[in-house]
Length: 219
Ligand SMILES: [Zn+2]
Image (cartoon, rainbow, N blue to C red; front, side, top):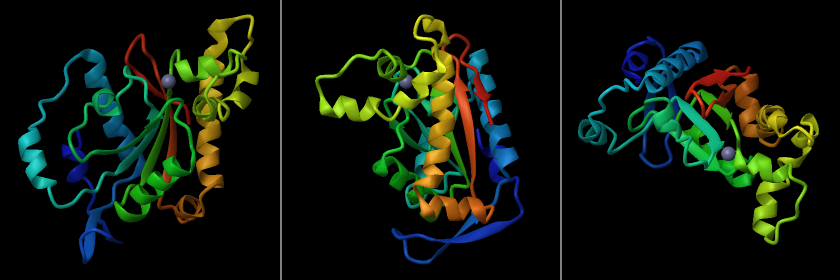
């Protein structure tokens, strides 16, 4: 997917790598270009014409380092794997997945790692059609598990956006939750806020349609 992306930018930045001593030269790619590459990969996925991925060659190239331009925070739903949805190869996406794309400390810490140490310049927060976590959170029922409650309770504020009498309005809660997560990852992380303020990080909100396979950029 990112063949063009890797040859696109003439600029490089230097980042500290905690795993391998020494500075790492990372190509700088504009957020627009990153989204353009993601959208192109998604279009291939939608059409069922995904690109061949030489995983053996990619594995060898990536055995000692990684510089994913994009960190994805998305739902664990088995139908929405980011690497397939965007037709990417090894090393393209740093992926953080929880049911309902929660922004708990572990998720945010993982995103900080991608931005600070791997050179990711875009975070993609992605929700999806008919999300089971959002459905459960908005059902009003009480879970018998404190762990499941921890998954559902962060979603609850977005349920006000839907009409409980009309389940088809669930999408409004899904999209609102994506937006809240976008705002919260910055509010909860001085590392990510600093990167945004310095123009080194862009956060993109997106929505995946189970019906069509299409990912729509929300903002
Ligand atoms: Zn989901």
